[in-house]
Length: 298
Image (cartoon, rainbow, N blue to C red; front, side, top):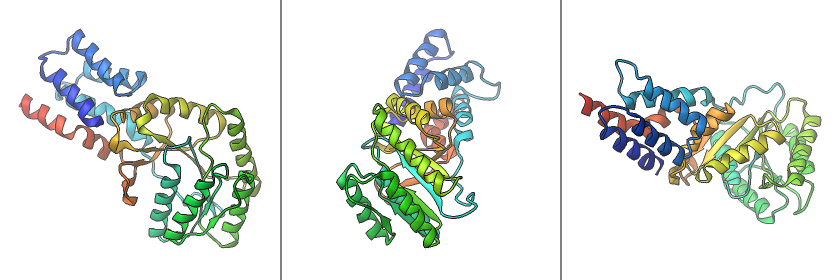
């Protein structure tokens, strides 16, 4: 949907214009903003079109700048950067973005890579969340450390850290409550979880992944701002990219926060959580447009 809306619009704009006049550039700016590309990233893309190199088309200029925005953020998660296992991975985000499903998909991939994994059911505010994670644990044959509904999330995750170390597990993935970024008390609880994990291991959590829903567009930016203010977010996961016309927000996130985009979700299947590849993403987004534009110019 993002490709159809964004690239379809760009094709119409550049296809009907023999020169990039002010009106065309204004329309291109509105199109990019409407697809949630964000102001800063939009200005970069417009500048790339204004300053086309002698040997490239407008399509190639856009492709070049999109890659320049995303490539610095295409850094895969390195589980080896942990002096004393377990590698503690904290997963945060608001309700409904797909945190628990993302955890399950990450765990599946790690097990397939012959890594030992433990899960922590730190979302104790919602009874179904604990059950959901336990169900995934049973399917994947991965231990899940859990307590009752309403238990102290920091206590659950601390127990999971101890269990992971006692069992020589390489990775601990901890779920957290689907915190609304406007609720200061829940953000304070998240800060407490970080302090408690730090008592277990001064380097932990080794990664704090913020899961964002691509369908939320610019609201994902607001969430990222709030979470980054509350905790040391070290990586992003962008889910539901396959069904969103607002996937341009990935450029806004990359340009504003400069954080590694660790994974993107492009479907419901387990293998549809993919390590983010900037080149593959931009090619999937632009390939048809760039090819058509190049052949037309030829």
